[in-house]
Each structure stands twice: as C-alpha cells, then as structure tokens.
Amino acid sequence: MSRLVLKWLIVFAIGLGIIAGLIFWFGDSSFSESRVNLTIDGPTQAAVGDEVVYKVKYENQTNTGLRNVRLTFTYPDNSVIMKDGSVVSDSSGVETVDEASLPAGASREQEFHAFLIGDRGNILVAKARLDFDADNLRSSFAKDATRATTITSLPVSLTLSAPPTATTGSSIAYILDYRNESSAAISDIRFLFDYPDGFSPRQFSPSPNAGNNSWSAQTLAVSAGKRISITGTISGSEGQSKPVKVTLQRKINGRYIDYESASATTIISSPLLGVSLKANDTSGYIAHPSDTLQYDVTYKNNSTFTLTGLTLTVRLDGNMYDLSTINVGGGFFDSSSGTITWNSTVIPAFTAFGPRQNGSVKFSVKLKQAPSTSGSGSLFVRATAQLVTPNVPSGMDSDQVSASSDLIIKITSQPTFNQTAYVNDAAFGSSGPWPPKAGSETAITVHWKLTNPGNDLSNAKLTGTLPLGVTWENVTSVTAGQPQPTFNQNTSQVIWDIGTLPQGVGTQSAVYELVFQVKIKPSMTQVGLPATVVQNPALSGTDSYTQQSIVVSAPDVTTNITIDQSGTGIIQQ
Image: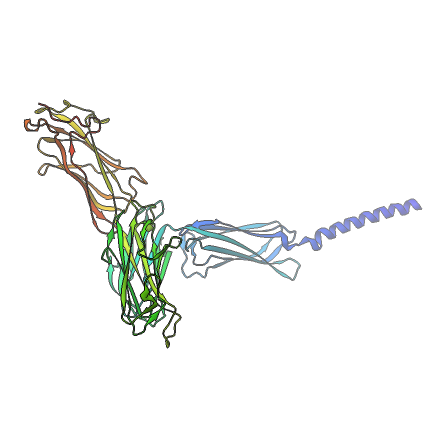
C-alpha cells in the first residue's frame, strides 16, 4: 500500500511541475512589454543639406501576437522630407505605418529619408512611437525611441551683416557674404531675403534675378565667395527690433528646398547720440594684406540734453587683424573680446557731454600678410562702434541711451607672380654660346609661376614683351588643364590668358606655371652689357570679391639673372 501511495505522490508531483511550467510559459509571463523593442538607427552627425536615412526597427520577442500596431515617426524640425526619391510638399513632418497584427517573434523595419536643415551646432531629434495591443489582453501599450543628430558643418558659409542700431528714416545696408566651403561645386542655388517691416530697398549690388529679394547662382565653385549688398531706408518706433533673414535654397528634383539661413537684427535707436567710423579717411576703403588701417571714430550728442557717464567701445572682428600691432589711441584694449574702450578717464568730456557737442578718437591696426584660413572671415574685417550711457534723461522710457555703427572693410586679393630663367633648362635643354655672343643665337627658357592665397582673380592675364633681338620659339609648357600662351607678332607680346585664377592656387592646390623658350641674338652695341630677354612682365585681373583691378609687376628678365648662370650673362664680342 505504501508503495502505491508513493507512486501516486510521485506522479502527482510531476504533474504539478508540468502544470506550473505551462502556467509560467503561457500565463502571465507569456507577454512582457519589455520584450517589445523599438529602435532608430541614423547618423549622430551630419552636414546641412545631407540626405539622412533613419531606419526604424520594431520587433515582438514575446510569445503573444500584437494587434492594432501603429508606428508613428516624427521628423526633426525643419526637415525636408523625401519619399520615393521626390521631395514631399505640404508635409506635417509626421508619418504613420499601420499593421493589423505583428505575430510573436516577428520584426519589421521602416526607412524614412530627409534633408536636415539647421545651423552648425544644432541638435536635431527624430522620434518614433509604437502603439499596440496584446492578444487576449485589454490594455494598450506604447514604446518610444529617439535619435539625435548634430549639425557639424555648413557647405556654404553665410555672413549677414546689418547695423545693430539705426534711427527711423535713416539709410542702412544689408550685406551678405557667402563662400562655398565644401569640397565640391554647388549648383542651382538661390538666396531669398525676408526684409523687416518698415524697410524699403533702394539699391542692389548685384541686381536681383527676381523681384527685389531673390538672387540666383547656377554654380558656386569650390572656395568661391561673393557678396550681395542691399541699401534702403528703415523706419519704426524707438526700441523696435527689425530682423532681416536670408535663406539659401537649392534645387533638388526640380524644386527649391531650404538649405541654410542667416539672420541679423537692427534696433530702432534713440537719435540722441551719433557715432560713425572711417578707415584711412573713407567709409569705402578696400584694403590689401599688410595694410595699416587708421580708424577715425566720430561721436556726437544730437540732443538738447547734457548726457553723463558715457562709454565708447569699438569691437574688432576678423581673422585678418594683426592685434599685436594695435595702437589704441589712449583707450584700453581687451584682447579676449577684441574690444577697445574709452571712458571719462580718457575722454573727460564723457563726464558731462553737452548738447550738440562732438569729438573723435583715433586708433590703428595692421592687417596680416596673408589669410590665415580660406573661410569667409578672411574676406573682410569689421569694426563695430558703440556709444552708450545708462544715465537716461528724465521723461524717457529706456534703460540706456546708445548709438552704434559698424564698418566692414573688404580685403582684396594679393596674388604673387614669380619668374625665373634658365640657360640649360631641365625640360627644354640649351643651345648657343654662353656667355652670349654678338651675332649668335642663344636659347633662354623663362618660367612664370602664380600663387593666389586670396580671392578669386577673374580676367587673369600674364603678359610680357620681347624686345628687338629676341624671337619667340613657340616652345611652351603649362600646368595641366590651363590654356596655352599666345604670341602677338604685331606687339611682340607674350600673352597667357588664364581666365580665372582661383583662390588657393599655390597654397591649397598646385602652382600655375607657364614655361616658354625664346632665343636672343645680341648686337655689337650690347657688347659688355647684359641683354634684356622679357620686358615689363605683369599679372593683371579683377578681384572677384572687391571688384578692384589688380596689377602685379615683376622685374625685366635679363641674361645676367638666370638661375643656372647668374651673373655671367654679359654679351661677348
């Protein structure tokens, strides 16, 4: 009997174990919300205008099927959404994917495409939400996931300048400087300006392509930079903010999409004070590297009040300033902020600045010899002056009285033109006697080399004249991709018409070089003297940014300054 009882107890225990296992497997633990996974795969960094692909994966790792499954994907703010290779217009920025069920153990993956728009440093967040029900359960469930992408670079640098303050009815200028800082040419772009209320445009440079606020560019070459200037009048109430915005758009699949933007704000200021800037006696000075800029800051009390406790500051912006050379004219220079300050300890009149009283201060600073970078900051320098006092006359609803002005100085190209000559050239060899003899022909090979660390030089041309007794041999070599030189027999002029000399030649890319050979046949009258080989060699062109004419001259080439036979080129009998 005891054996039978034991046997049944063992069977009973095994049965209980099986039942407990089934309950564990198919009971409460058969569905666990934590075993439904939702993830977003996408880049953590991107450049503005990059097409980004988000891959959203969701999977059911439970043993229970899911019902009424809905995936909701929210694109980052200001994204341009792509669907089947085309831009989606009038999108809410949200997409949904519905499924009736997702079986146990099943997974799905969805892709979402977009162009990211923003400023450098912006963090753009994509969001996904999965809503679902579990079979045999009445409750609804949801899972959330996010993916953050940081904007790390801007293909086109945009620098939009507007005066910080202006009085109502005054003339102001908006200046946009832009440059392609990517590694490839950018095509089919346009700039749209959104002017503030109260601004009336009057003059443009260059003229807009459509209306009074749209400029187009078919192609913007690598490192190419240009400027758009808009002059007009501004009106408004004191203290009003007048923001101006420019949006760079690019044509993709036949439709322009927002690519980048920049903005600046002008405050309608009190006309009680006035301040203005000049450099080297003009407000339109165009500088060269190594120039010394002599600034003159003029200030005035336009009111009928005596204003007390004034402070004048000038902030210097631009990597071409050589701040080690600054002469502050009695002011105090804070190198950490690039700001010069004058107060009543330096200018006693600022203690009590009487009605209609005026004055000026001067300071100077040199520009560096060459751009330190290829970015748009090398194209100009900016000085911003502000005259301010916290002591507001009674009856005025303001916490200060101020005026400000800025002066942007363009920096023109500074290409270099170097020339050398050889009697025995490594590529073209030699012929004829050396030292040269009267009545005998001797070949000389001339090398012209160009570098351009500054702005693009358009209509670039190298010229030189062959004097009597020198003949053109039509033996030449140029940098790959460059045009061949020509020789004008009527003027005896060698002409190398380059077209555009790009920014960065010789610093970021190979030097441009022309090599040509001539022959000299000295006369008896030149015996005892060196003979001239090339006269008046010069590089000419137009700075594409400042529109200033550029001429760089080099000394004449003579038989006495050849590299391999220097000082031995005196003509013999």
